[in-house]
Image 1: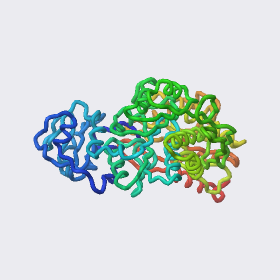
Image 2: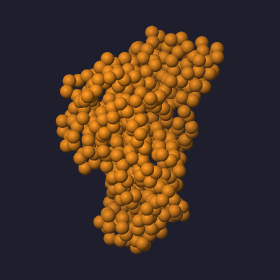
Image 3: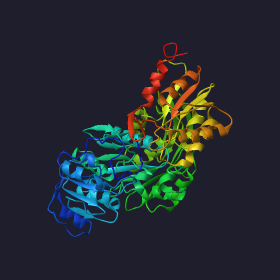
Image 4: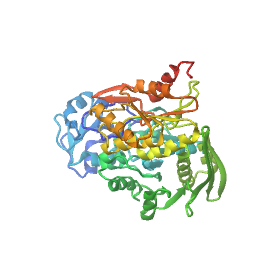
Length: 514
C-alpha cells in the first residue's frame, strides 16, 4: 500500500478490478464540459460511463484523465486508453484521437468532475472521515465496527481494505484516487449502504482526491512529523489536514484535545466541534480514565455525555484508547447509541498490520506494526517495553522516494527505545537501497545504546531477529504493517511481513521455539 502521488504513467502497483457501479449513469461529454465552464469540444456527444486516470484500468465508455506526473505525462498512454475503450479525455492538452476537456490543472478538477459524473453519491450517504498522522486506520475500522453494531449497512475505505456490501478487496492507497473514490461511493449507494468510513490522508487532501465528497463528520487523531517530502514543512502538512474540516466539506469536527495541533484546529474550526482526550483533559467532551494495556487487550473508563462505563478492547496498545474515543465521539454525535458504538469497538478483533500478533508456538511475543514515523515508534515501543522484562527487538527500514529527513531519526528512536535493531530493506523504489539502509543504521548507531545489525534481505532479517530473541523477549517488525508489496528498481514482488515472520518463527530450532 502506498499513498504517494500518482504519476502520469501507470502506477507501480498492478491495477485492480474497477469498482464501477453495476448500473452506471450515462453522462454526455457536453454535460461535463458545461460543469467545467468549458465550450463543448468536438465529439461532445460521447456518452460516458466512468472515469479513470490509469490507462491500464480503462473500461469501455470511460473518460481518461491524462495527468502530468513525476516521470511521464498521462498523454503518453492515450493510445492505450483509446484501445481499451476510452471515448474522451481530460487533460492539460488535447489528446490525439480522443475529444478532450482541456483545463490548466486537471487534477484540481478531477474530484468534483468524478462526483458530478456519478451523481454526487456522498449526498446519499453519511460519510465519516478520519485524518491525522497516526491512528487513522484503526479509528476508521472502529467507526465501521460501531456502525455495523448499530445495524447500519456500511462501506469501508481504509488503507487496509476497501469494502462494500457486495465485495471487498485490499487497498492500494490510504485514500483512493478521486475517480475510484467516487465509483466506490456510487457502488455503496447502489448497493443500499447508508454509511461509509473513509481514511483521509494528507495526500488525499493535497492532491484533491476527496474533492467532491461531503463528510457528515470527521476525526482528527494527531499530527506528527511525516510526509514532508510532499508538504515541505510542518505548517503546510497541518494545513492539508485542516482542510478536511472546512464547512464546505465537513459538517462536524471530532478532535483530539491531547494533541497541540488538535487544540489549534478546534479553536479555529468554523464547524461544530466535539473533543476527546485519552489523558482525561478537563473540558474535553469525551475522556478516558483508568487505562490499562497488556498483551491481551486494552481497557479504560469511558466518560462522556450521559456515559460512565468500562470498555475492554481486544486491540493492543494504550494508543488504541485515543482511537476508540475518537470513534465513539463521532458515532455518538451522528446518532449512534453509545452502547452500540462501544459494542462494535469491543468486538473488533484486530486491524491487519496494527500490532498484529504472530504466534507459532515461540516463547516470546512477535508482532507486526505499521509504525513508520518517530511519533508512531514513541507510542509503540514503550508499550512493548512494559510487556516484558526481557528485550525488545525491532526490525525496520525506510521507504525510498519518501521524506529523507525522517530516516536517521527512525533508526535513532528505535535504538533509544529498544535493545536490538535490525535494519533491512523496505521498498527502495528508484533509490539505492544501500543508501537507505545506511541512513537508518547510522541513526541507530548514533543512539549508542542498542545492538545494531544490518541485513539487506528482508526475509533473512526476520530470521535474524527471531534467532536473537530469547524467552520473554518481544520481536516487532515495523514500518509496513499490512502492506503486501515490495517495490525496487521498477519491479514489484509480494512480501507479507506477517506471513514471512511466521515462516521465520517456524525455522526456530525446537518446533517454533527456543
